Image (cartoon, rainbow, N blue to C red; front, side, top):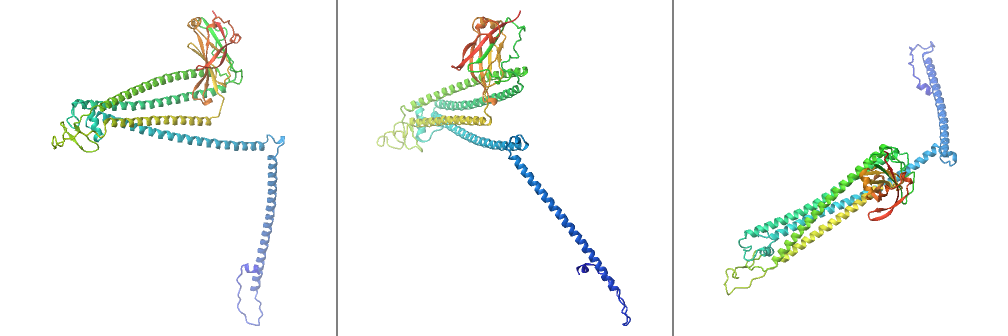
Length: 561
């Protein structure tokens, strides 16, 4: 029925109605029904075929998915077995190496996070110290400004002259105290000479205070210059460390090998003779083949040139620093002389203020005049005999005012000195924190050392070593003048053991110890290699303190004719 309803319907052929009784059948309606039944059967068959094909494809997809799931499970199980194997056959496998690499990566990430947190904490503390130093610097500047203001105020008050006063009876008393007896007072016509002298004293005192501030500013500039020179030395040390790394990469021999610049046997030497100095094994050191690698000829010459340049730069810096320090000492002596002169002027003013004060004049204290006395001692408009009264003393003597100002000035100087001490302490703490941060940034390494020997104008040095173990040979060529000096017994070799401060990233050279090796007995020594000569001993000094012993042997070799 459904098929018949879905099939397209054909139009029926309508025949004309015939009269009854004829019995003619209507064929058009029967043929249309048969065509509709055939079309419905074909659609049903096609739908059944499509359904069967879909079911077959579904079964194939399910089978394929089951096979893939089983294969994935077998692969995961095999991977787990490989990763969990601990026998000898699993060592060195790809899975094991991958697992070790992942573990190393996790440990490195954790260490990196810890180092970053430490660096952040150190940087935060350093920033706080810098902020405190800036705050202390501002407080110091404010205190110095207040000190200059008080000193200028004191100078003006001591100058007097009626043009400026502290106000009231204090300023009038100071002005009258500086006026000699017989001269007009403040209330009368001023003396031209006294006023000019007071102006000159005030200007001189203000100039002295300006010079004091200028000397302090010059001291700060000198300190900044010293810091810049320290930065230059740090850059030179960094370059030396880079050169040391290049020499270590080129190395392939022992440190006890002869120096490339040493004269070869049979080689003609200039002048009258040649001297060979062998310095072997300082006290407490052993021969170690891993102490350092010998560089090539070009690298050794470059290292020697760099050392000599650094040494000359250090000497120039030391000379410049000494000159700056001498200038600073001179400025400090000038400041002390100026302070002594100001103190003497203050004492003279106090002595003048402590003398007999004239009665004539007007006394003021914080307001208009209260009582005015003439030369006869009577008030204006009063009877000369009946209403005459005794003169009233000043309510505040000038010596007290001067003492108060001196106390204020002393307090300001004390505060400025305290702030300078606090600023120096803060800068020292800041330097310590920065050094700790640098030490945390670089890993701890063995110290890098090298040995130098100076004989007259000649300098010889060893290669850069790792550690303090030294066993090497140094040679020199001497002429007629050094030989004559050796004959007189006044010659010697200065042997110094240096260390690069801070490991490979050191900021400067540090001399660990030094020894003076006498060369007077070198002329009488038998000719031959230095190692065959008898060993001798001399003390090693650090400053004035003996820190060890140096064992050495000397040998001489004359020039062939």
